[in-house]
Length: 132
Image (cartoon, rainbow, N blue to C red):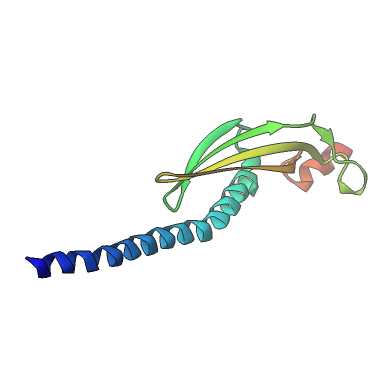
């Protein structure tokens, strides 16, 4: 009976150490995945197919088991790009995107400001037709 009690007392610190290592490995995995998931989400929201979809104000999707909730807010009005950047071809607008990354009980929210650009025409030929 005494030997069992001594063995139990010896195993408690080992169990605590293993529990701490497990928690640390989960935090490290989340910390390494978070920037990748965040960059992927921003790319999906601003990718080449984004202009063909309606400009939604909020939504959610999944990336590698992470749930991504997002909200988009316009910070300026839509204006022509101007100058050498295609005054008659591209509209620009300053916007803010708020991302919330969720994995199990972990939750991280970040805000990103960027210039959203939208081509006015589907392709160069459509633009050239307006000049004639």
